Image (cartoon, rainbow, N blue to C red; front, top):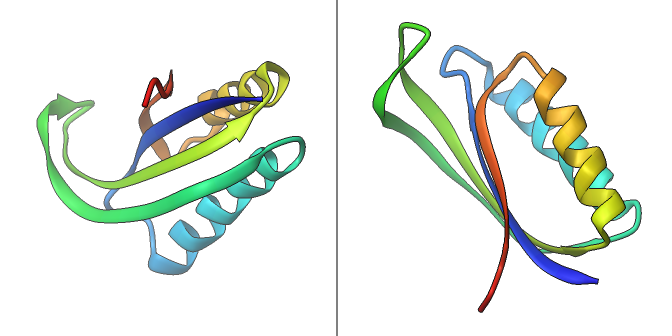
Length: 94
């Protein structure tokens, strides 16, 4: 298993309960063949630039160990999730 990190931004109008459910959904995907080492909901922040007329977003950072298959599944699910504005999955070199 390799170390990865994912940063994703959730739409600002999403309710707190939905944010919690969304983060648990992504953690369950990672837990199916990997393990979450650190999970941090950073909170609502101003975006560096507007994305589809959205100026704010709820930032979430997750460090995890997983196989490439788990990363591919996480990527697929994040692409089709409407609440996620942007996301980036990278290999953690540290």
